[in-house]
Amino acid sequence: MGEGRLFRKLQNLYKLLNELFHSPKNEPYKKSDFIFISHDVNKGDLFNGKAFCKILDSVQLALLEQGFKVLCLTFPDCNLIGDKTWNYVLSIKREYIRSAIKNMIKRKFLANNKFENYFKLILDVVQPRAVVGMNLNDDIILAARELGIPTVEVLHGLGYVPPLQPEWRNKPVEKLPNFFVCLDQKSYETFTQLNDKSKQVLCKHPYYNSNFEKRHLNEFSLIGLKIRDRTIGKKIILLGLTWGYAGDHGPFVEFKDVLPNGFYPEFIEDLIQNDKSCFWLIRVHPIHLRKKEQYKNLFNKLDSLMKYGNVDWEIASESPLSLLFQFVDVHLCMASMISYDAAIFGVPTLFMCPITFKDRLGNYPFKELIDRGYANVALPNDTYYITDWISQNLSKKREKFQLNDSCLSVSDFLTNIN
Image 1 (spheres, helix red, strand yellow):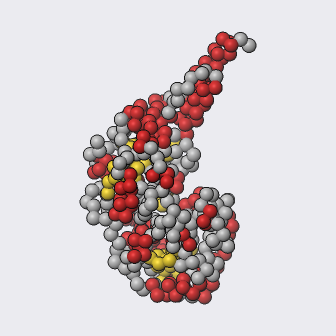
Image 2: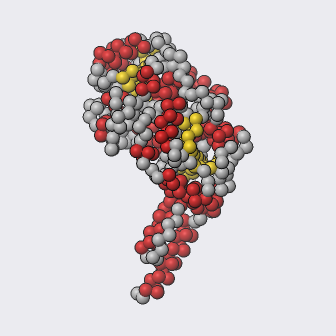
Image 3: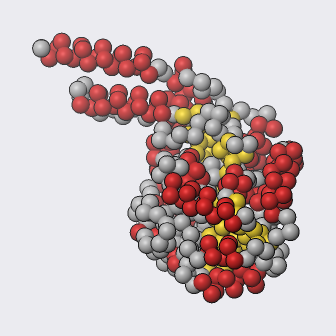
């Protein structure tokens, strides 16, 4: 086959792919004031059985109430889309695949090294005043910078401590978002290390300073009744489970072999069995719920614990944290930022992971909570200390933890962004 004929065939294939995958103009992308984008892992709560990101979704709700249009997207490798999510999130997988194939053909066969950024195609259609998200990737930030659209990274959690993670610290300025929105004082101080590259903004927590629960009072009341009926007359212990200890640690080798059963200290079953004055709510991580087949060993263990009568994992795993902590007396976990949610309700936390003493970056995670009396640390095999801590703290709720003194809401910051 001659080179000219091959070239024409490749050109026709290129056009066919364009038609096959369509243009973003033909997708359900409407001109909007803001684009919100996040990963599955950021949607850590369930509300009415739908995945819910209490930080970003609360901001979106505030903007909608002010009359702004918000387009909610998720990344190509995410599965929580459409009616699986509280705000009907759209996937950008089609645009990602379309651009990847076009770029491959151009590079390998057409001697064209001009890179097509799939997110720039979306921005051209939507024309937002800002892109807001969690874990914004390089493609998004580069596309937005090219078009002069501000990017805003809203921190996924609370209590970030120095030194700053290398993935932020070592990035060139052109691949960093224009703004970092921090929701607590400690994180704000930590991210000021990027002052010469990005701006930091301290805002009040969008969920805990909203009327979301009042707006959905009936739904929250029904969930609350379920918890109350199961736990009446008992002290309540919340055991929050985390991924990474069951051979699923990936690059986080410090989690390897910490827990023999991969999920929680084994002696906890003895505590459940021997003390019927306490009720244990066990909350699995959202990753566990979304990959039940991979974690079937965990769910078999949890189902077997139900025989004791003072355990429930389903209610705890399907209820919003803000509702759970209204009932809980103490909180146990390996190492989780949920401890800040607990502190907001005055509930003390016991960390049981070795990294909470000092992590691989030399950080002292949760030092703020520990120093202010909202948390303690123990090794997962220290049966005596953990048992004693539980008994000593069951009736010792603290004052509600204050994240910061900011009066600025995230939605107000976004509507005045420049």
